[in-house]
Image (cartoon, rainbow, N blue to C red; front, side, top):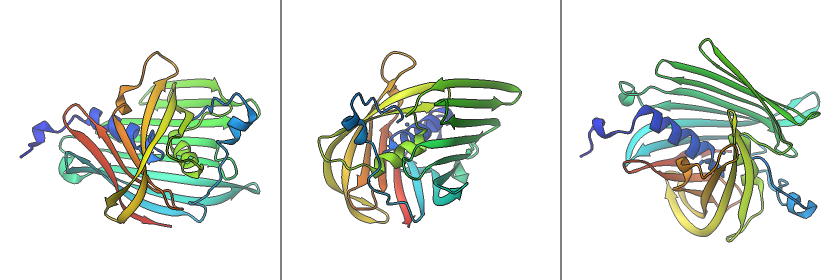
Length: 278
């Protein structure tokens, strides 16, 4: 029997949740941050142009995070198409929260939003509102297509920080997941993207290592098995937070992120799809 004293700290859970679901979900999402495509040739860059749009009609999905089989948090994800100044975009909103029985230890009510172009899936705005225990952090990132510059504004209480960087292909964690879902890949491929988080940027390499059946609450699916690797481009070495993660995404036309499993200091965290509509 596992006691509440053995549960990982709020900081550890938050890092695992955000990085494991929004970096690899990053193949989503689930697991799962990919922004610079590192394409040195035109034909290489064309590999990262969207080919499928399984979310074009809108989507609603719910995921549940468990630590060693104990439910600890859930997330609702809503995707809608919209038109701004005559141009089509997609807007994704993620609402993540801890389960009530856990809130004496750690309470989370996070909201993450991303707006990205419908044709290229390149993001234009990213918002992350963190509400964790007494901590309140608001992060807003905007892309200027003329200067190819990202401007990031982060406020925590009275502390305000602003960052800027130039990258034509950099993506936020959510739009990176949707781009990965839209690509045509096969077992043996390795997708490379650049993702930003705050003032840091990461090269995410997603190795498509196999196909296998996987069972989640919504059914049994043939799925791609993906091992993400993350390199911090603003410092040396790998980002250990997702080094031992595995992502499964459905191999059908929906390309739904189904499960993310990530090792933690004690045991593992699993994030599963429990409901999905499109």
